[in-house]
Image (cartoon, rainbow, N blue to C red; front, side):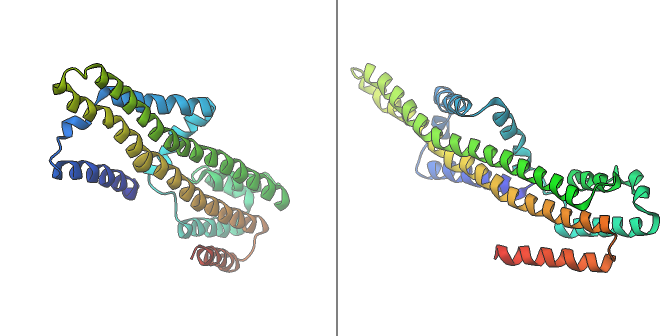
Length: 253
């Protein structure tokens, strides 16, 4: 579980509600089914029109990346690769076949299967890097789904407010209903602007940040898999992978 993601959403929404209460507002006025239907239904419709169903389904699946726990760290991946290399040098690559299925990381498991299948280093590198490219393209499109939803929501919120004001104008002859009617109308704007800036846009940004981390882990795995294939000395591979990690950390500063 990503505590920062949950904390961010809870803190953001709580700040809005808390500020409303401190100003003397009633939280019950912020719950409007019609406004929610207009904003979230309209945003979903506009997003569906902009992207394919596959993109939308991938976007829902990507929520696991946003709120779920992180994958294995770089240090853990390096230790796993070194352990595999030691066994390969002792027992041979074929002996790894029975152990590969126990590896949790899908990308590492796939790379080692390519090694056991006897593919050349160039082929292994090409196949794995092509998978990274495909994964990047998919996740970037997923990020755009949430960014687009964040762009549509405020505008649809304004549309909901206008629709609410139209209903207020129908009751203009009854002053007692005007104030409450206007309050209800502007709840749609709150839903639109709030969901865009507290949920949709931050999720899109989070996905891109996670994507950078995962792409680096995959590139690290490729270096490790190639080292296992060549049967290099474990100390040499450890130094090379740590240097790869240090270079990445330096570029991130």
